[in-house]
Structure formats: structure tokens, C-alpha cells
Image 1 (cartoon, rainbow, N blue to C red):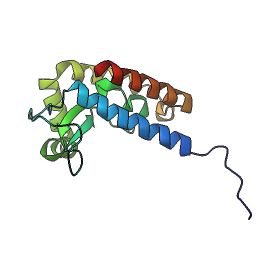
Image 2 (cartoon, rainbow, N blue to C red):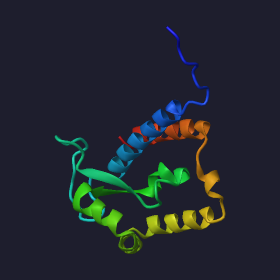
Image 3 (cartoon, rainbow, N blue to C red):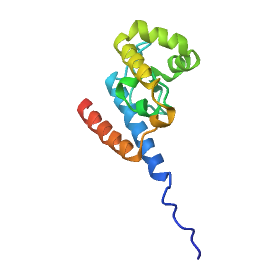
Image 4 (cartoon, rainbow, N blue to C red):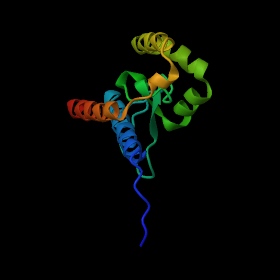
Length: 145
């Protein structure tokens, strides 16, 4: 049987670590907000029958991977209607964030101002940084439980 050579620059390890970091980040956000939607206040259980009824919403878009797994970068929102509202109305969401979560809004603004001077290609985390972030998230998760 002929086998293809393994690509040494495979994205699989990166994708696995990114997936693990995202799952850990969501759990940390859930624990940080104690299962309560930041917008409407509804209480959620961590794992619901039929899937999660809540989402961690990024206050800086998740495409900016340097901030993607920062705990300060997330708020817990009901999947419907609160997360849908935040996604569909980003300007209204930022106004709400400024009014209701002033410290988090200030953190966001400071990061955005800093990021304006960094080329977009530099915002992508290296594999070692991803592994480090996974370790940090696991520690934060233990600290929050």
C-alpha cells in the first residue's frame, strides 16, 4: 500500500489546539458569569439537553486571534435572542457594553487602540503561543471551579 508522505506543516495540531482553547474559553466565560446572561440576566445550566442555550460573545471579533481566548474578551449571552441581537447589531452591542460593562468596554477600547498599530498578520498566534494559551485557560478554569 502506497502512503502519502506526512506534511510536516500540517494544520491538524493547530486546529485541535484552537478547538480546545475555544471550548475552554467558553467554559471560563460561563463560570465567570456564573451561568447568567449579561444582557437579560437569564440563568443557564452549563450543558442543556439538546445543546447549549448560551454563547460566549467576543467583544473583539474572534478573527483577531491574539484576543480570541482572553477572558476579558467575552460576555455570556443567551443564544437567542441576546447573542443574535449582539451579532446582528454590533454598534448597539458596543453601546450596551459601554453603558452596562464599563470596565470591559474600557479594556476593549485599549486593546483595539493598541491593535490599530499592529499589522493584521502579526495578530495570528504561533503554535507555541496557542499551546501556552491552552495551559493558561486550563489553569483559569481550575481557578474558577
